[in-house]
Image (cartoon, rainbow, N blue to C red; front, side, top):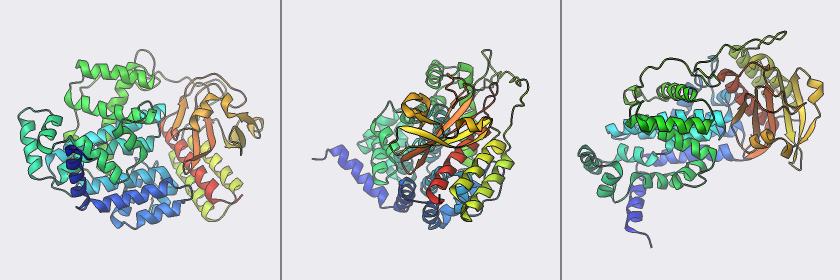
Length: 476
């Protein structure tokens, strides 16, 4: 038998699902269904998004922004966006667009802007954490953005109840207490219900339900929201903020000055992301941090800032060339449409890695039918012949085993050398998936003294997604 609280929550779920929000729920559900299906193609995702003219236009606009388009090469169709910025990124854009457009159609209570700012700030922080330590960045971004979907939906649609809660908040009552007094439940309960009704993804369900709290993806979503909330409520030098930064440095395994700079950079990125998604003047709702000396970039020296990277003798440090990378991606897309073979397409992709990303060596390995071994099928760069055909047991390489279980890029600056597969210096590895099934691993390495730039890592992630398209659509 349902409790009184459950009945009240369900009444609000039905009320919101009876407004204009069902359009949002169906669109997002269809996008998610296609994106997670084992048999769906890029064309399937393009068709679903293309049925919503407003969403399609916004997705193309955002795909053309510097956030996703590394060198401002024109994207004029959803299909081109999938190829150029990646299947997962287009899914992320589409779901986010659905949320923003629907939430901004409501009464525009000022609390909508407050929650929207918190959501974008949290999502920017969480995605950066996931990129650094693993944990499915695209899913983490969407889950962090939607974590307070009930709060945003309520404030965008409610009338007298919103005024009653607002009055209590002005009197100094805590949010949860004010919500329970007026509604009979906290709005976090509404978020949990709407996430189920609108099929907003397994990760969000785990976050709202307190399930798998030891999962890095869940932890990154929660940390993103904790950072956004603490910086909204406290000053930078308050004890609460400093304690949170200490925990975050431990979670990411980076120095304290580095995590401070990362949080600052993510706060700036939140406003840029929101602006590209059509939310204007968000800067007014975001916290303002005091200026701090030093850069404290990830991987910097002990004194803060980043020490110049010495160039190893006899070998120049290669740099990413975003314009060349986009040219190679365009050539790859045309070659896929023209029906080139899988081998030909993979050679094009590895060429993009070598001269577009600027890596020293790269290889792609496929899982064997028994799924306990990896066989290197393609390679480029130095010592190519020494790795092609190499077969290794997944269980003997912890790093490779880890990336097969996640969707994010794993970056290591130094680790124990496992020759001939790995250099022992800076490397990046990403698992390649078709649907939800891991099929292989893409690896790249830099010269021993040179850390990867974010441009290189973002380009590497895109190429990992392109492999999945090649494997699923090209003939052998």
